[in-house]
Every structure is written in structure tokens, then in C-alpha cells.
Image (tube, rainbow, N blue to C red; front, side, top):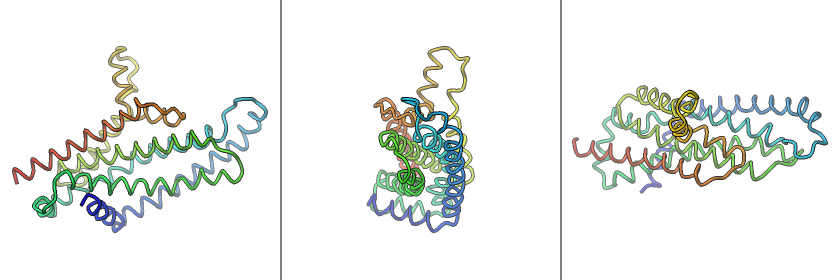
Length: 251
């Protein structure tokens, strides 16, 4: 049943012109950034670094910055992708029918989460064609490439879980989108306060989405970063399940 709901959610996304517009615009912007960074690398960095042992390569100077930009762009578009997932069902009164169907709340939330996550993964696979094209002319660090892709997959999954929960709190998709963007931005910049005490600063560092994402971009695979994303995803999915459960009880 989870897979059925996920496919339905994915189909609904692709039936929306918004999803196609996001795919097209994002591809265009990322392609421009990729070609710009590649040109800078070939004209500026490659001649300077040639012959230097242990110098950063194309994976560090082109692919990693590209993935970092993709991560931030995903943050900006995530509210538009997730805002309708539950709030529109509430507004159209179809959520009541869904809740009364012989399917558990857990299956509903996990199915919608899986559908949104699959949309992000399709987007990432399309974007991966750009860095993979570099294999035709140079050698990439496969470890850093896979680590960066894993970071993007976890980051986009966290965006999906957070957006799904906030969409369950309101019948207005626009309100869901704005609140999702606000929370994601807060979690992105929360470590910017350098004047805080050491303990608070350490807490902010741990809560920051960007801190853990940057570790993956450097090719550092740590269970600490993996656990952070899995916890974040789990917490917001559980909150979404509890919210819909409460809604089913109260009507």
C-alpha cells in the first residue's frame, strides 16, 4: 500500500505544470553554473595546480561546489514540491476519504514521503549527468562523488519529511510553503551565530543542515552525520503520523 500511495503522489507531482517548470529551470540554472565552474577550473586552476602533488582536482573544485549549490537550490524549491502533499488534500476534503480508507496513517505518511523523495531522486539523477560527463576527459574521485550524492539524497529526504509535516498543519498550501521555507532556512543558517557560548555554538553546529552536508561533500562519511539525517527524517515523519492520527480522531 505504501508503494501504491507513493506512485499516486509521484503521478500527481508530474501532472502539475509546477513540477515540470521546476525541473526545467533547475536543469538550466545548474547547467549554467556547471559550465561556468568548469571554464574557471580549466582557465585558472588547472594551469596553476598542474604538477603540484596532492593538489585538489576537478572533483574538489568543480563537482563539490556544484553539489553545494544544488543542495541550496533544493532547499528553495522543496516548499513548492511538498506544500500540496497533505494541505491540498485537506482543502479538497479528500483527506477525510483517505483517512477512512482501509489503510493506516503510517502507510499514508510513508507513501507520500516516498513519492516526494522519488521525485527528488529523479531530479538528482538528471543532474548527475553533468559531473559524470567529465569522465570522458578526466578522472574523478569516485569516493567523493558518491559521498556527495549520498549527502544530497539525505538532504533532499530531510526536506521532504519536514515539508510533509508542515503541510499537514494547514489547509493552505501557500502557508505550508512559507513555513517550510522558514524552517529550512533556519536549519541551514543556525550555525552562523559565532558569538554564542561554546556549548550553544556546538549545539547549533550539530543542528545545522549545512554542517553535516558539507562533511559529505568533503568525502567524509561519518555515522554522526548519517544518524543526524536519519533522526531528522524520523522525527518529522513521526510528527506527521501523530498529526494525521489526531486529525482522524477529532474529525
